[in-house]
Length: 127
Image (cartoon, rainbow, N blue to C red; front, side, top):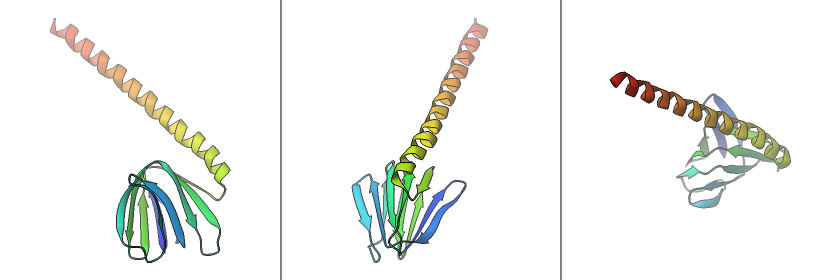
């Protein structure tokens, strides 16, 4: 079956696999060729893809949506990282996802400060 992993800026992976394992909101599941069509929201976790030559590829995804239709599996996620080695993937995920989480936290904090400054200024002008 053909699997495509899409992130907002590009197609991260597009290739043939013989097995896919993932974790969704309903729990862990696997997909083999000729599996019934379905849609599953994914949780933050690791996808395991087995290629036709028997090698495995791992993808860390930051949530997303999996759509299985016919011989095609489409996975759309806001962020993902690929690796053939699980230990390296853990290091990369820790570095990239945690950095992204920290930047998002800082941005939310800055927005909260701007909002409170705006409200304080608005109240002062109303007096």
